[in-house]
Image (cartoon, rainbow, N blue to C red; front, side, top):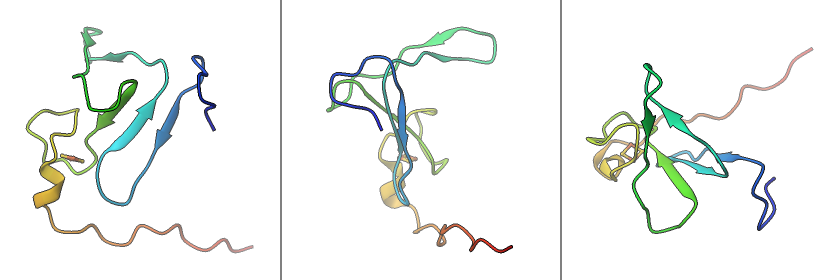
Length: 81
Ligand code: FES
């Protein structure tokens, strides 16, 4: 887990609904290597990546997920030996 003030590690928080939250020093690039500059959000240092596929601003979240049906349960399957 990233510590407050840690500028070297990256944390990606997966949530059941809404964007993936990326914290830490990352560079986003297009398939051709062109850098993508993320929009400035309400929380400095956090990039919100769309996980629902409905954003008009992919790869970033534009809050369109709020109009989507809830996703199916995504609990991890039980571990069996
Ligand atoms: S997760 Fe927010 S628009 Fe897709």
